[in-house]
Image 1 (cartoon, rainbow, N blue to C red):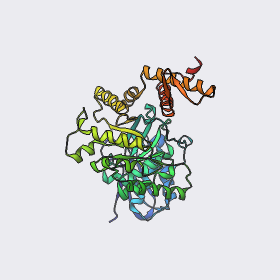
Image 2: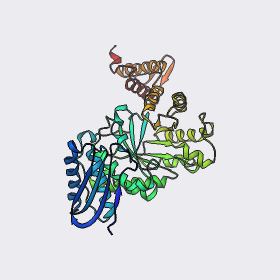
Image 3: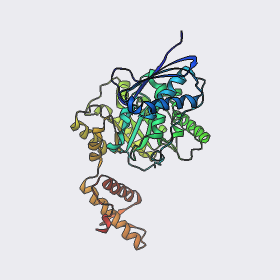
Length: 402
């Protein structure tokens, strides 16, 4: 009896996805399609399925396609995943064309006020994620994906990186731990991911291992742009090794913390006030600053409590964090608003920059504002404040001309 291989969403009413059942046999290719849009798109769905079979050298077998409004990149990913679950020895790939909007670069200093987590197994949540204007979008291969779906999800994430427009958001992927995470890298590094989040970071050695694997893959595929790293510290051991982790790679750009796992590791309950995690968060901030990195706060898990979110963001900014994680698009705007500079911060920054410009024009080596001397870090902070103000719509880019 021939074995069936099934890849795709479970349940009766998934959206923007497709479930595929593949029965390998010696007969000619046989495709059966059920779809509410079969009349309009049935031919293109079947053509996409046939293309994947051709790319992977599959000439026999039966495929049942249950379509729920999947886009081409999802159909291609699901087909490749189901075929390779039956034929793990196949090394060929069926890659969608890399879209021009997927080829942008990132930078070390860009804003990372908000990072929106998207489960890598749910393409319906990826499609419009960029219109909410998060600073980064994280396609998650780790905690948000069931163990049974992790293999198939890699193809979804890979194809999303090649095709979806994230409207300028930094393109991030959270990989799994250990060997599984190293395998994840093979699915994303060649496809213009900007940043990789490393979960459960507890030592510098972990970061070096990931970094070395990225270097190896980059050399093979000819990638020149760096892949930035953001270790996630989620345990007592990680907190105590925070500086070692922060300094482990020149590609580190930020440290962040995951408080759900951290408080579980300590055997305590996470609270809205966060007193139980103050030491850990302060340690992360100091380690990040000592290594010249950004510090990013954890997520707020109650998406219905905007007041608690704003209070948490205010506290995070006061402690020295540069941003927070998000698990829902509605959290993005409040976070941006709370991390935006105040009117007094903007005015102070303007005075510092104008004083610096005046001193520079006069050829002075010393900059002063009133009775206070201004050094380079103060000017740099002022520049960042102005950049944040303009990004937040609080200040015109041409403010000096007014």
